[in-house]
Length: 224
Image 1 (tube, helix red, strand yellow):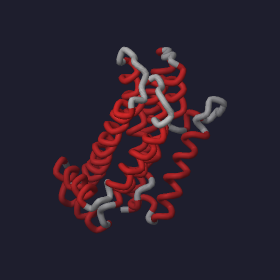
Image 2: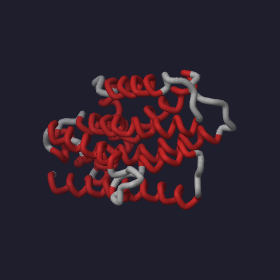
Image 3: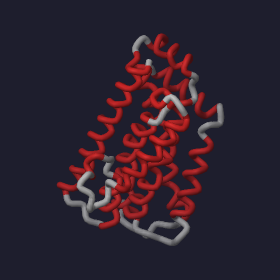
Image 4: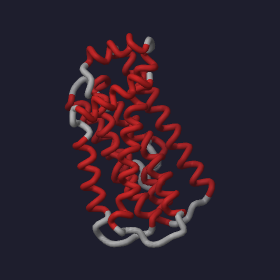
């Protein structure tokens, strides 16, 4: 499975498909940090929200690199559909971590952070790490292996990203249906981190990612 994960990452990079989402992320971060200094937690909280659709898009691109026939051969090579599926999600997560690392470094390079004791950076890292698995799961649901066409995949990607923001608003009674992006951003920008809310946000992110990954696995199995 590790060899297949490495193969998919190499294919993602060597075909040049890794460039577009990285450029888009760099452009978004440049705009975000071009307006002056902010507290680290606040800046990173907004960054995690902004990068969510880009991380999902990056995942979709990575999972769509392989032709359908090659993906079926990969199942035979690793001996298990679950291992093949897991290797794709693992490769997407590894690629996403590169984008997260860029997002963590960007405000320091731009001089856009106010001095703090380092706690804001830690909180910002947690915010990105909560957004990453949710984005990977959404990108997987938008991949060609599930949606069958580029148009359907784009619709899933855009709809999922928009709903994550709209339904995540504080006034929405359906917040629990979407990844807690808005809740995380509210926590980081408020400067208050009550234990109950932090646990709720983390739990929601874990459960939503797990449920979406399970749905991806089921859909992949039904379309095999």
